[in-house]
Length: 287
Image (tube, rainbow, N blue to C red; front, side):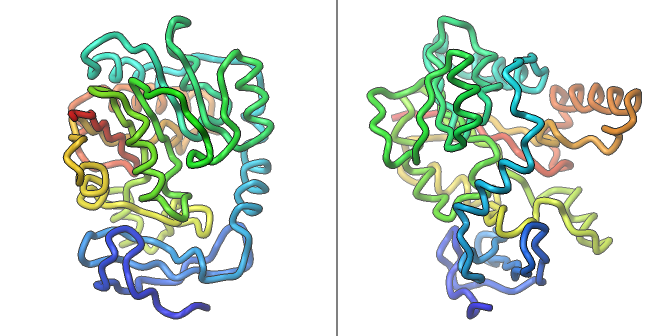
């Protein structure tokens, strides 16, 4: 096991404490969960054990997401809701969208044909499905891609928690947003009722899954990272289950009913309350 981290991975503060060891569900190791008392973020140390994270992510993605490898596109109320929010927040009709970590391109497919839809996806299997759907896909790391334009919307869904250098990625994405455009981020949220209840009941939150998930932002530090240069402002946020939480998914009738209730929740005033463990944040470029 590595020595205690000196600084917070997200704000560089030395005011960190150890919480508890978390057993990895993927490899025979445990990782120490840290908390920063300065920015209230939590995190794991990716260097705690000498393993190849790139290989682990690739193997895990291939095993976990076999069921997603289908060329059939089915519209999702969850992604339709997000598309509608983006259209309302932009000052003009959307012309282009770039989705980072787009998987099979489901989110992109919800936009009209006249919208330029591009994605970044490292998985060869996912990329092939995207291309078969007519999407423009870059199969490389963002910093290695020569993008020839800026975009009305750049989205990054359920990705930052996986990244060894998340601040670098955020700064790279900000450069790709056109003036008055949006940077939309979805991350797991530990500052919520669900995680607090699980912690008190000594039940491990499923997002504490090292080394697959490394970073757990607080609203304070995420806003600081995105808005620190004065070019972006937070214009909207909403809490959500992430579109995947369903304790009754294996019971057809109850599963459908719960999904319906969650769709209502996502569109109601309740989404401003930190009940569930994911959050959408919409940042607009103002300069």
